[in-house]
Length: 414
Image (cartoon, rainbow, N blue to C red; front, side):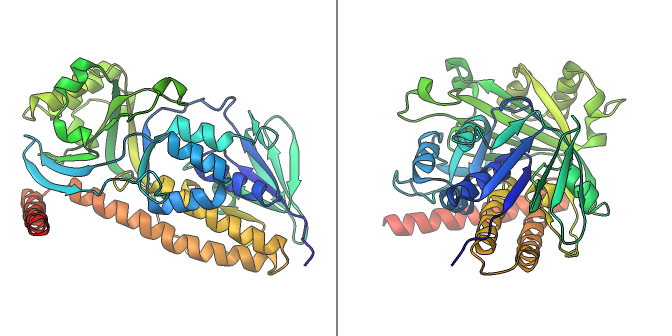
């Protein structure tokens, strides 16, 4: 069967865009990636991502075996338990996870964003163009699509893929009616480089894995530690070990005279610690001793119906941007990348025409992508319930679940 030549233009060198590029390159499909950042580390913070089984499956499909092996080597210490606490560090629920086998490609693994991007960029030097700020596209029926950039250059291709994140310029032109809304929550984040003092002051559950703390006044805190087991840290793309945290509350709860994003960082820090004034002192000190903090609004996309398919489509946050409360945004983008990779391979092999193939991809992606968006919103609502009764009910359910899990563990061990 003769192959159909395709030229694919990807706007955005994030996790999904790079995974797709790796998958297409492996199939000898012509792909070009255009990234607005001038270097691979512009604006990129070293916070961890949790690559789950779906994300690992997609990465294994998209990457050459040697790169996937390198990715596993870059992973931090695997999660041993997920803990749910109240703001006094009383245990509500702990979910213990089975040990990760070194040969288990589908196991959940934490990995630094910097390390992930560096691995995904390997071998793409001639494919990724940095400093290319996308402006708009033009496409007439039956003709190639042309991407235009702010420096006056233009590139034509058979398919244009918007993988340019939550503020996607591709989406803004393709689907100007696709809404992205503010949930009313603000998220403040920070990380503390690991030291003996930090290790001693950090609550123990945080070293087991993601730790979720539900507090009064609809406040919530996520924390996790990034450590490396038996690895020569100096050889890693991002060797830093640290504790990371994220505090979230409704904008008005911060009690600031200006929007949190407009406050100077010390004023913001005082506002967060004031919200935590009756929390366990070790959680408060974690915020107080973080050198640099950042704040951003929790926004979410809203489900859209399938649109008339054309030679322009979307991937990841460019369409189904979600709040971070399920930690599945990057994994959903990786699922998109693998799905779109398989779709374009079938087109290149002449098994299906381009537009019907892209239409099938979009219908499927809308379905599972917005299911993930809605699951994340549901989790957000649970963590930030305004009603004291609702928060008490959530804690009661967690305690009951914890008791059942503990009983099952005792029965298994008997």
